[in-house]
Amino acid sequence: MPTGSRCAPPEELGTAEIELTLWTAQPFPESGESRADGWRQRYRADMDVAVHVSEAVLAQGLSFGWQPVVHAGGIATIFYREGRPRIAPSRGEPASLAPEVFLPCLQRLGLARAFDRLVLRRAMEALRLRPSAHIGVRISAQSAKPDHWWASLLSALDEEFALASRLVIEITGSSGLPDLEAARDFCVQLQLRGCRIALRDFGGGGDNLAAVQACRPDIVKLDASFLRRARSSAFGRECLQGMVSLCSHFATHVVVDGVEREDDVHVALAAGAQWLQGYSVRGSEPQSQAEAPAARRQQVDFS
Image (cartoon, rainbow, N blue to C red):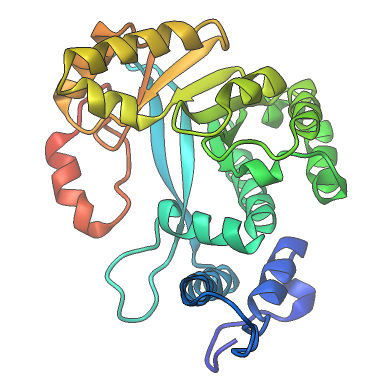
């Protein structure tokens, strides 16, 4: 770690923090190795991000931005709030690091599982502090397998069934599940403890049908690209309507994601949407300070 980092003593760190720190301390491969320049540049960039994440975690710089999933009828019904992890900015940077930026880096480095467990622990702490809240938290497809890494969290959920019933585990589906059998067992174990399972980014890539069959999710979140395409073409609107109808056969709840302006609500409603999510839904927190003014101007009020 660079000099001046606020590092806590090892005995005060959790397992996930220790694992993340050890990974980010790995040296870069020798320059003599026969690697493509593009690979080396990406590795360096990913490691820079991972080090930033590790230092922020140690310095208590991990926080959540909350984005509600609301009823499409606008009856002030909030299904749950997705907790989107954010990493505090480094010195000189204007905004926090959004999950769309750092999560792909951690996945490529094999660090996503350690980070996911850390985020889930923080989400459970938030649920304990808010007895009436329902919270969703995303994990990568790499994390969807029930092994010893998850044993302590499953044990905690065994002892806190009321808490588990307020927790939604969102599995990112666009990259595909590496082990369908393991994912099925993982989801079953969580559902038996009262958690809901959501499959997010449905239709955005990967083998989504296989993921639905394996996970048997309670919630399917459509990839935001469907709503974007529906804004500008009749074919896009037909696709959105068809996907909402299709997904209603796979899960009890279907969420249309990507609401960014008031017109999106009308498009989603016309397609038969039940639940909506996006930065323009009131109660959402923008990713960065730079996005805040625009988001406030465009927010749709469901309260």
